[in-house]
Length: 99
Image 1 (cartoon, helix red, strand yellow):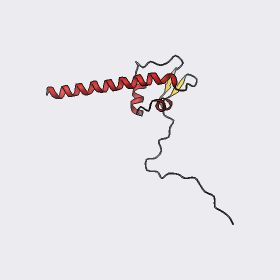
Image 2 (cartoon, rainbow, N blue to C red):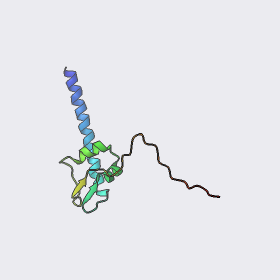
Image 3 (cartoon, rainbow, N blue to C red):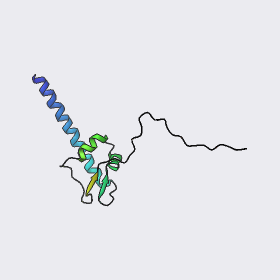
Image 4 (cartoon, rainbow, N blue to C red):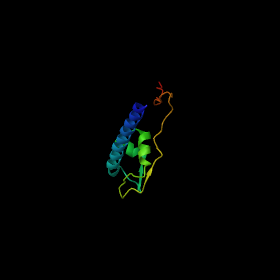
């Protein structure tokens, strides 16, 4: 029983350390991302850091995140299209050759 608690405590500590390092990476990347009218998109932070999207979103929702003074808010809705999972790729249309 004690071993299970110790394993859970070790896993929680590892998760907290990982989130802390991701938070630090986001804080360092924020001054380098484009800011438009005081707004930063989550997509531009994702491109800069390559942190998994769900983890990035949870980090950006934290209250203890330090943001630069020129950033008023962070837009958390992604503008990247997800696409359909099993859709066939669309190719360009080719014109028929007339003789």
